[in-house]
Length: 186
Image (cartoon, rainbow, N blue to C red; front, side, top):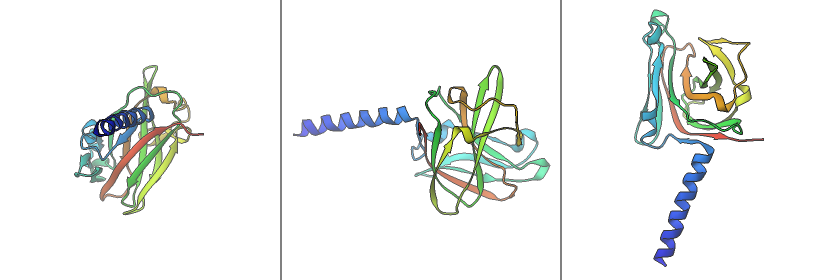
């Protein structure tokens, strides 16, 4: 009987891992996920805002503080993605907010050009939320300005995913990330 339980457990683990990788899930409760992320703050342009992705023993946290000094006012983190399949058209994000407005962002490289796409979302302080973002609702941006002539966002061109805060509030922020899942929805 114990051998049968071991076999069932192994098959279940293998099935779950295949299912997770097929859906392109990022588990922010994994203590190693935050290590895949890089911070890019306004100090690249002379600002002094801070921000980074850390792990608190349970979740990954996008934390820092915005500052308007030296024309600053944004903080971001991003991570590389492997090639996505063309059938992906949505992202489900589960998070715990602080009442501020953030952006989920994708970066593409196509024909030698880099384009950033954003979708804003408002958090409710202390409340866990799940939100579905459809790729066709993302807007192309360059340094905060909308681009009208950018190509449509297609999953095969996506090379990075990220989060950005630039809500014009020079205060500390914390976005607790739980899970992100790339999906195919009708």
